Image 1 (cartoon, rainbow, N blue to C red):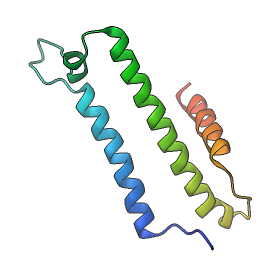
Image 2: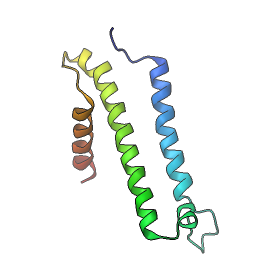
Image 3: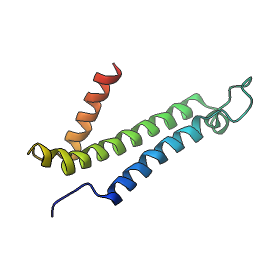
Image 4: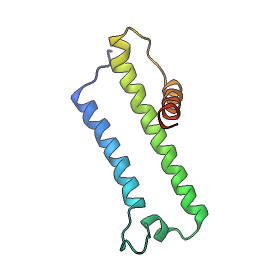
Length: 105
């Protein structure tokens, strides 16, 4: 079975990215006046440990989703265009982390 980038795949990938951004914005958005900088996360969790745990879990889920998306793009597009081998999830995760470190410093 040949994997190709299709319209349904693009729609699903876009929706996943939008949902990750929406969840992040809903959790960290300022819901009161600008004078009081309270986020929804601060209102839900008084403990700093709980807030850090939620941020960590958000980071983990985002990293996993981005790595899965990168793997699918690689296996469906780059492997065909440049006659490269397909990669697995671990390789895509490592590549995403490496690219993040290079791009974001």
